[in-house]
Amino acid sequence: MSEINENNVAFKSKETIDGNLATINFGPTHPATHGIFQNILKVDGEKIVSSEQTVGYIHRAFEKLAERRPFNQITPLTDRLNYCSSPINNMGWHMTVEKLIQAEIPKRAQYMRVIIMELARIADHLICNSVIGVDTGALTSFFYPFSEREKIYEMYEEICGARLTTNIGRIGGFERDFSPVFHEKLKSFLKTFPKAFEEFNSMLERNRIFMDRTKGAGPISAERALNYSFVGPNLRAAGVDYDVRVMQPYSSYEDFDFIIPVGVNGDTYDRFMVRQEEIRQSIRIIEQAYKNLPEGSYKADIPEFYLPPKEEVYNNMEALIYHFKIVMGETDVPVGEVYHSVEGGNGELGYYLISDGGRSPYRLQFRRPCFIYYQAYPEMITGMTLSDAVLTLSSMNVIAGELDA
Amino acid sequence: MEMLNNESILNRIQENYGTEIVASEENFGILTIELKAEKLHEIISWLKRDEVLDCSFLTLLGGVQYPDDKGREFAVVYHLHSWRNNYRLRLKVFVPTENPSVKSIVDIYNGANWMERETYDFFGIIFEGHPDLRRILNMDSMDYFPMRKEYVLEDATREDKDDRFFGR
Image (cartoon, rainbow over all chains, first blue to last red; front, side, top):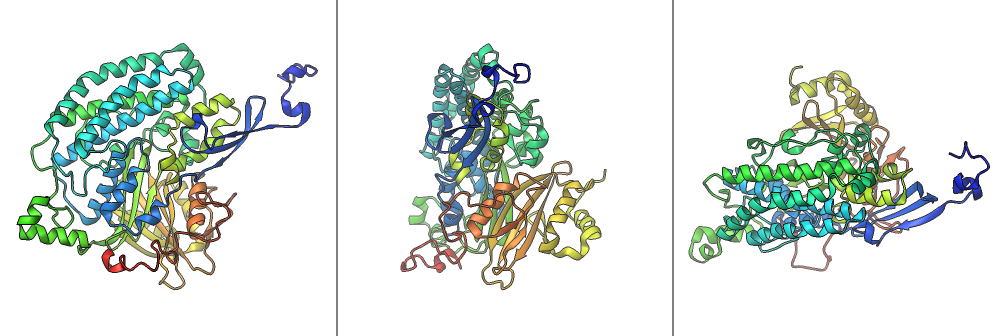
């Protein structure tokens, strides 16, 4: 534009007028960052020229802490990675340990896990997508899905007593079977949720204002996304159909029929659409898993690792011995290296566990998808406006807990 | 195309870089290859380009410390994933405490950038050729590398938490 209007000051960039760029601190604490991140943006008018990220504000040294904790005490640490979908993190960790100790998990427990994990995925995606609405100025779309998320949290509560940082399940399965209240809640959720979800969807999906705001905001090409090790909905929005649930099925995901939605442009709108479709697919998976929920036990038969019921500990010699062995850490753990990954809310969430036979890991490394893909953020927002940067951040679903570990 | 298994993957790497392989094993289904540190960059770059192996994706990069293993105290572990063939590959290089440095692979996988910074931040492993090797999660003024085993987590004067309780 400046070429056409050589002498018209209004069309020239600020840099060519006085050589100065404005610096804006986006974060660390800012309502639009939805977490604690700092971005030092250099802006030319409203266009972003460069950005520098600072992360680590809520680093809690989980990998170090994990080296001094028994396996079952690491589960609460994983809660606090992606706290929007903690059950997926918990189960990913349980499955990693089960892989190491080569425990066979009954089909019923696997299906129960699938139900919980897909509920968690719905909760995670609902938050992310409703927040995209907020950042485009549509606060209504934030309140509608919250009552639905509340129902999911009530179901968590029914299983494990907690809502946000769930610490759900155990190594080997669950601490108890689904309660009658849970069954009722799940049935009514499956009945009412699709309708409520489509209501939420209709507020944004074909909304002219929303589409104009989100289309073309913060795009990334499939090739760049791959190079940046993107995973999950952000990668699928760019057109690559990688999903751990399909590539390396765990917990009986191979039994279910669902599709992996992909986008084309990798922009905010595509990320939104991919997440919306994933919510519908998650409902499909839950319906299938619940309909075909096998009979059997909700826990594996691994007395060396699974705490016996308390009443048995008082009355049964064998249970008392196992209780003692588990609590005092006298069970032998195999030596080896395990990598296990699950499809978390943000994509491939991995656990690299090195065991030296001790009761706690010799080294535990989390593959935190947020941490890895957030580094592409400056590249994605360069040349965009400041308001698009806000939108890009929320549509990438960067969760501070997962980013900083 | 014939399906690759860990044996054929190892054979293919051996054909091309046989002298660089120090050891190899299969650990819970994932082929683990220990390589000499000098040629690591070249091998990873070849693994990405190679039509048969096609390791298009860097899953994870991190460090491990084995303080008692003299001369090879630090390990850098790379998890690669070939999506076309759907297999994972774990590469390891060992470096000594005196000169804990390996070549950066940021030019091959951009995603390695922060993972290498994190490994530097926590273990002090230097990645040569990294564009911006600074601390990332810890504060810049920190003068030690906290994931090293010499920094014990518990207060050293505590007697109630000794290694016996952790099965060691």
